[in-house]
Image 1: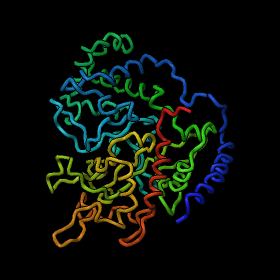
Image 2: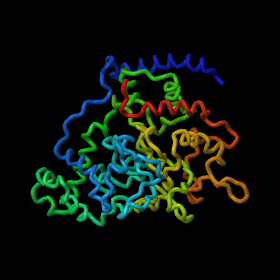
Image 3: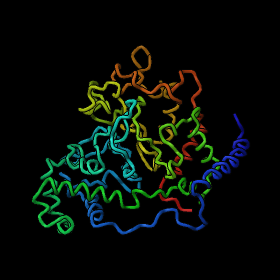
Image 4: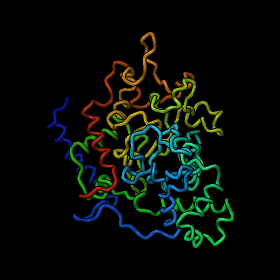
Length: 398
């Protein structure tokens, strides 16, 4: 193993090399400059969206708003480690998937298939919402979330909200007489809020400051960045690109889908039924014939990942350390992550029916190893990657 001194000795040249490249990409700046962009006044539509986002009265229970599952202090992810949030008419029904973070959604792409058949884009873990606006309003009708019976129920609540007069002023005096029209404008207001509010699109992390030449990464953070990018080590950048594209800040997702064989999570009540499986993409009615997509879920952005309290689509892991250790030890030490059968064999990929095990990613690093092989990352290297991931949290202050 390389000594700490040797590793630190290599970090400084790495920093200089990276900064040399970044200087050609518009890096620079002076000490004391603010990392976060200045807030600007919201449009009338976005200001309405902000009020709607925080309004629990628009739910069947009267206790759940969009902000309930998307806390700004957690990068607009849940502020708890639950595998799936509670909702429904009485606020006591558990969903089947972890609520995703919703920052930077304005950069997302519509769902589509590439020429080679690769699925890309869309909203939610299975990409089922085709547009930003559709994503914003689906929770109002989801029986496990805000649980309204129909659009008319949502519009009736909206018409009784304290800001109803403002809604009429912006969208027309008779807006509530047309349920479909009012619901569409509700979705547009939410979409506009998430597009305009600087908190959703801040690019104010330490890594953003580093890319602009306004901050230096520590030795551990630099080592973590190198391991994150290395195809032979973490290989994280294969799905979570860390470099600028066309002069734009990295989003840390390529909007693709992957099947990681994440272990079944007993915290999700629905999983008590051994016949139930969350199949991801192929659970969508329009993709049901595509058995090759079963078990695939959207690759999330890693921006603000260190602020989350549960990881993967089923919230199976509660710490970054456990999530990253699973990544690199899934195949070298499967007994650590999956249950054992009666004969002592490991029931690998236990959250998928056996016929779909072939869909699990086993060809790319770090999943291309076998029991007995050394994991792609050591424990110390995992800590370095985590140090780097912490630089992706918005709100960095020099």
